[in-house]
Image 1 (cartoon, rainbow, N blue to C red):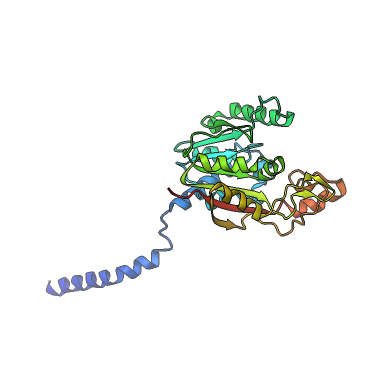
Image 2 (image 1 turned 180 degrees about the vertical axis):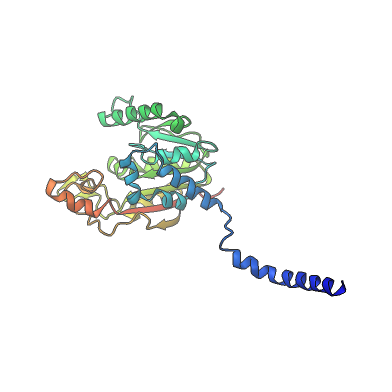
Length: 289
């Protein structure tokens, strides 16, 4: 009996000594999800969800929404203002992620303005129709008016955690309203809030064939200056949306590339092979008080 008891004691001691090593060996199999892992999964599910068209899902390969939103630090309980949502490409992803714990505000062109163009009215009507067709996705999305420099109503100052703008800044620069636009982003954000900017990247904002028409490309220095002058601090840059194949010398500017393909039919195959534009991805932060 004594021999058996001593044997059990010996086994327990050896087991206790080996336990740390056994836990290390199993560490790769025991994975605890971090907040960043969770948002990665949530955004990925939304980006590939059945509520999106095949055409929109196909653009994931060029626009990298999962990596982009993780880089900006999106969390499901944030209040997020998406500026000029256009055809709702990113709205379709943000809405499901923020639906339960956060708020999504789509800041769209005021289609009731006398100066509103048919293009703006069409986008607004299409957005409202899409919201009505898919209430399970968009029911909680709020709409704000954003028509710089005349009408900007993004919400109360210091009320948002994040402002996002995707491929819009060239239009404001061309119209002379970029300074006011970026200042409005700063104002609506809480201290410590994030401004995420994705923009076609290039040195020449104007088409070489017509100096009055924009190419869609802006330099990083120009965007950084706009944000810095509004009060933001550049926190990080990413090459997530870079495309070294983009030559940036097209007769129709950035719109010659997918998905617009505003080019002659015999160049379409070539431009399809290039992919979407080379884009800067910049994360700015509003300083704490």
